[in-house]
Amino acid sequence: MLHVPGHDRTEIGQLHIGDTQKRGDVFVHRAALVKGRAPEPGEAVRISVDADRRKLIEGHHTVTHLLHWALHEVVSRNALQKGSYVGPDKLTFDFSSAPLTPEQKRHVEKLVNQKIAENAPVSWTEIPFGEAKQRKDIIQFFGEKYGDTVRVLQIGGEPRALNGYSMELCGGTHVRATGEIGPFRIVREEAIAAGTRRIEAVAGDAARAWAKEEAARQQEKFETLKRKKPDIPALPVFEIEAATTEMLQQIDARSVHFEKIDAEVREWEKKTAKTAEAELKSRAAQIANELARSHAEKNFCVADVPDADGKLLQAVVESLKGKIKGPIFLVGARDTSVALVAYVPKEMTTKFQANKVIQQIAPIVGGKGGGRPESAQGAGKDSSKIDQALAKARELLGAA
Ligand SMILES: [Zn+2]
Image (tube, rainbow, N blue to C red; front, side):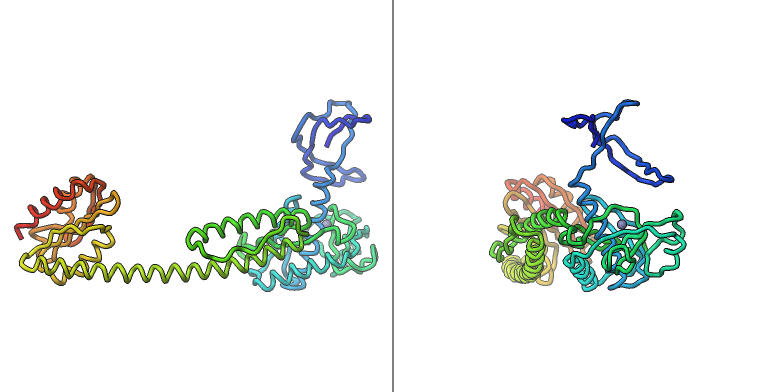
């Protein structure tokens, strides 16, 4: 934030610092103006840091060190850092590795949270680069350009004694003790390139904000399930006043509950679909038997099936074609839609074509359709013209 000096500290603008580099004894900040105006040349301004934002970044940055350490403990010392992003809202950490198993992910998260709970001191000290290079326990990027003196960030151990469990060359901004980070949660683990994984995580107030958003997403998914099957048991409560650690536990409990009812609803849907399929077949067989009886004297079947859709008509044809020698034409109406189905035995397709029959009749009921010479379907939306459609079908197929 940019202020004009004085008692009231009037804010004139906001800068976004994109990069900081040490040039000799001077720190050079590269910044973009995001709000207000830039200082006039020669104008005196005071610069202050957005403390809340800074605190979130310090937490996310420091926990990145812990995450890096935990990945080495759980996955491998070869899980090399490929890049990272640290913001007030979240952090991401890219590393070379095979996909993490759910157990590894949980283990990493647990280790990091244990280290946060220990409230270990976070310290830093400067040593000659030549000395740092000899130390295998200090993580550093090979090929990266460091100055003659480097800053070692240490977590655990005695402050500045270089005996912590996590030691890395780092010029970033950190909390003073791990307890300041607050609860840590891995929210995603995914591939970003072959052999490179990305962990996305949140800590402290950002974890709290994530938990609230996640609770809302869970509720939305739950409502979708409930629309399918209204009698499913409700999600466990999510208390927005609870401590962040409890919130995260509630999220987990809700997630377990959701998976369970999701599986139950799927199973129920499968059963329902099977029952519906069986009912459709049995109803179709019954209709086909009646039609076979009433058309026993004829060598074709043109009929109207009450309250039928295309699916039922198709099933009736399947059942009827073994019982009748000639072509079949069925029409049905359900609500405002009209369904048409035509079938012609293969040996009769030189004389009649099901697709042509449908193409001629569908426009009568205000629709269209098509298919193959043996089998075709159509649909329309004018059920008042069903009698005309039947008459046309008798005219076309009656010569059989
Ligand atoms: Zn750092």
